[in-house]
Image (cartoon, rainbow, N blue to C red; front, side):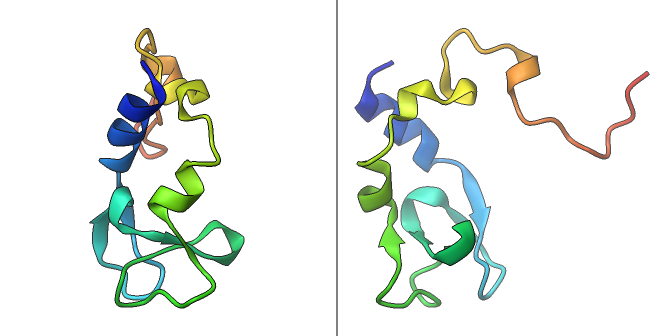
Length: 83
């Protein structure tokens, strides 16, 4: 998976806005202080848009975006009871 494909896949994740608590695609959000994400309505001028902060990351290294990722590298639901 190249950087562009990883960015597209990463951007399709859903994230809640820390201001209004609405759910948005990550590609439509801004990164604020302390790693909080904000929508267009709640953002301010000190925040970074998805395109800006992902251009500085190597998304291909994220375990959940690896093509051969198994369930152990995916996010687990903490409320699921393991038997």
